[in-house]
Image 1 (cartoon, rainbow, N blue to C red):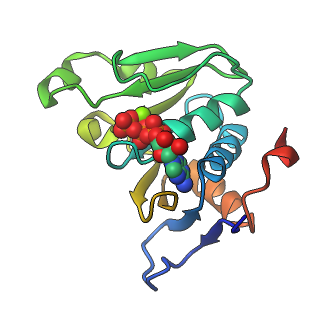
Image 2 (cartoon, rainbow, N blue to C red; image 1 turned 90 degrees about the horizontal axis):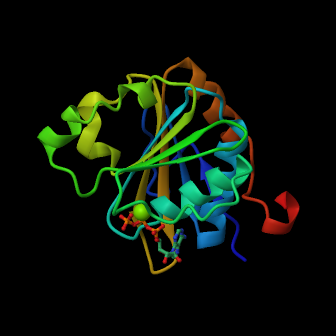
Image 3 (cartoon, helix red, strand yellow; image 1 turned 60 degrees about the vertical axis):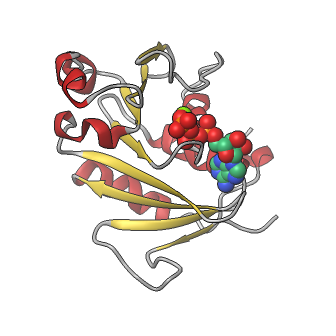
Length: 179
Ligand SMILES: Nc1ncnc2c1ncn2[C@@H]1O[C@H](COP(=O)(O)OP(=O)(O)OP(=O)(O)O)[C@@H](O)[C@H]1O
Ligand SMILES: [Mg+2]
């Protein structure tokens, strides 16, 4: 399998402040990235997932859930706003896709956003105005059918350390290595 490339430079040569770039060649590699983030997560962490329909946000969230020891199916919560799972730390998996701008601010999500679990939020850009200033942002983009370009941006010291750790990984390991 082609190795996942983890780099401070976008493959087009650009750099972005506080960001690293990952090329995922398969759902499995995206899942592995989720496993790594889940392993590094601490209570109160915020992971924002952005990118178009079907790009792989839930795939990544499923890796995070697995790393927290959650065995339940964490398939996309698109038809419910939020699902709560009990793992090494609580997981609050949210999806803002179906919500309007004004609905999001009325939801009262602060108890979760500033709580003791890990918040993983799909379509986070729709609720950007209520998100904590410190967070980890992952933006997924289509390249080909199976290749996704993932930009990880850290906002806040806590996440700087996390991204530093991710950047030291040369390749996303095969599933069997993390099983
Ligand atoms: N490199 C890749 N990384 C992640 N998913 C991939 C990749 N290549 C192909 N896929 C496929 O893309 C789809 C991603 O679906 P997923 O539900 O994770 O997307 P999503 O971003 O959560 O969509 P939605 O916006 O509808 O919630 C899956 O069918 C998966 O198999
Ligand atoms: Mg999804």
